[in-house]
Image (cartoon, rainbow over all chains, first blue to last red; front, side, top):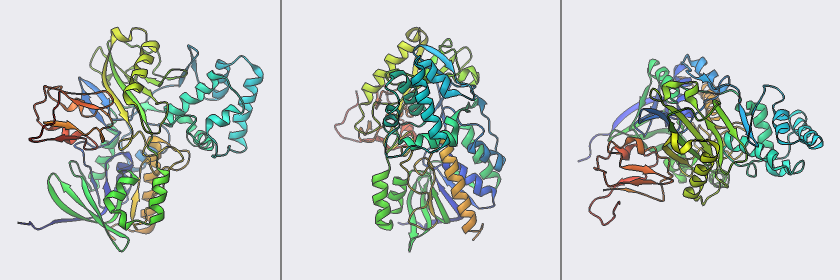
Amino acid sequence: MRRNMIKKSCDVLVIGSGMGGMSSAALLSHEGYRTLVAERLPYIGGRCSTIEYKGFRCTTGVIGPEMGGILEEIFHKVGAEFDVHPAGPPHYLINGDICEVPPKGGFRKLITAATKDEAELKRVIGAISKALGWMEPSGAISLQEWLLQYTQNESILGIFQAMVSATMFVNADELPAKEFFVFLKKMKAVRDFGFCPKGSIALPQSLAQVVMERGGEVWTRSPVTRIISENAIVRGAMVNKEGEEIEVEASVVISNCGPKKTVELAGRENMDKGYLTELEETIKPAVVIAIQIATDKPLLEKNYLIVTGARRINALFQPTNVCPEIAPPGKHFLLAGAAPASSLPPLNVQKEIELCLQDLRDLLPGFDKHAEILLTSTFHSNWPAMHSWPGHDVPQKTPIINLYNVGDGVKSSGMIALPSTAESALLVAEDVKRRLSPGA
Amino acid sequence: MITVDENLCVGCALCVPTCPEEALSSFGLAHVGKSCTECLICLEFCPIGALREERGNEEKHD
């Protein structure tokens, strides 16, 4: 027998508790909107969360949140604790030597470490200065194509490949040249970031606390099964809360589950044809390989290192240098990030991981003796590093009125990863505030 | 038994820490080992629903 449908109403329903979802929920709760977050998984945070494993605070994705930027601004704005400890200055491994990047003149220092040819140095630095100070290069060519106009030096090309693949999650030959320079101007290559002593989950938990203190709710184990709309206006969604079907009426629905999943939930038939075409042509999931490692002694001198010239590894992080709480007493935690040769499918994941392991043995003396691999994680397809490559995003608004997307598939130009999700949340929250009052 | 949908699994390895029997491993793709007791805890932790409970069919895990 069919039971009576349980109904609930709120001003704003947020689908997914990733950092885009939690940031928008906290911002709107803070402004007085009755907000409900529905998360499918048993924990909040999505790819910015923590899973305990063998006594280590392993990450579900995020390793180093940006500091001093839009993400931190949101936390301050809503009065949430931002417990992130600075990772310190960036270092690059170039031709076997470690090079510290100063706050100013970073490119000059890096390129000087890669070439003794003064004319080449002048050519490359001149091109970078022009791109930053006068006009960005066209987005019609890749960063790699742009660089090849000024140098063929493998070590210099390797610096850009490592920088881009470690921070923007695409290869230099996949990134529109313009996008790189917008990124440098907007985010300063994410120079300042840190580690969370309680694990990345501390960030969404802190925002969830704001939502709940303001009378909102955060449900876990509660997948949204359908977004409801009428005459191209959103009305709410069906939520399966721990096995119980609930119709949630909402004036605004904000989806943090990726633009393609949003369409699936709302129904393709309710979407504009042009939007669907744009979605298919634009969205390209970003790929990352992350290897989480336990060690019985520190294997990395620095807190983190951008690695140039390796087969696949582009970054090494040792957060326990700054936050020993991440590992059990006497142990250390190391995370290696890598990019495959191509971000486009098909991806030979096993081969890519093998190349990463070869890199780790070369890069870290004593790796086999002192290290134990905890988790080898690949992020791509439906659970990607970012829902789309930089410069390959769709708008935050959807063709259904009051249905928005937030997250790293609807980024602004030059934004990446966590800051991009935070910014998308801020833009959506501002649009909601402009258009609808709480309780409307 | 628990099976892995190889078309969906991305190898994120988030299932691995959830198994009380340490029956799960991941190297580009999740793998369910012999010590699996079918407690089903891993199913709800998979972010894309690639782990499934199969009943009464011929599929095996090794």
